[in-house]
Amino acid sequence: MKKKLYVFAMIAALLGSMILTGCGAEKQEEKTAAAPQKELFISAAASLTDVMKELAADYEKANPNVKVTLNFASSGALQKSIEQGAPSDLFFSAAQRQMNTLEKAGELEAGTRKDLLLNEVVLIVPKDSKADINSFNDVTTDKVKRIALGEPKGVPVGQYSEEVFTSMNCLDAVKAKAAYGTDVRQVLTWVETGEVDCGIVYATDAAISTKVRIAAKAPEGSHKPIIYPAAILKGSKNKEDAAAFLAFISKPEMVKIFEKYGFQVK
Image (cartoon, rainbow, N blue to C red):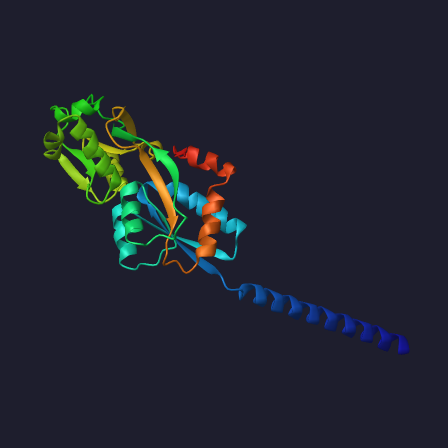
């Protein structure tokens, strides 16, 4: 009888220990789940969509306490939203103009601006196009009835496009055929779907699409160098993590990721 009581007592003690252990684990899980997660807001040019998504995912894996929220649009639209007080910790522009404007307005954190990437301007056509478009000069001929361009006031690729055609002395003729997109990805989509005969995008945008082909690169010296600057914003409430993210994507091992999407690291 005593032996049975002893066995029952041991079982009860063991069960009690397991319950306490389980409760302790649950409390630890609750404590972990309750740990505050910081949110990092990044405003990036539309042409950075694919590479930035991959970089953000890698950063979140390495920093599970940080949630990266990405906002993609034309650099001009992002500049305006930042000026109007939209939450943003980091800004990645596809051109110097928008970053210069923010810097003059005192919107950038001093000493954080850096030139990050280089890109190229290319003329693209639908992959199955039979129009025999092989150069920028072809845009002014009967081969092209409609060309997609970025809206030049706020879309850097549109500004570069106008520089190219101005250098060729044919901007007015091209404008007469132009359909203007709100960002470079809209231009790409119009060419992919065949809504236009051709369009001008960055080499990186052409590289991610299986529905277009590059007809020609912009003539050498026909536009300003395409440099992508990045900077922490003065109004950021999370400057430490913004600086950490910028340092993370600037590591030598990240070069391969940028190159995978067609960018050149400056």
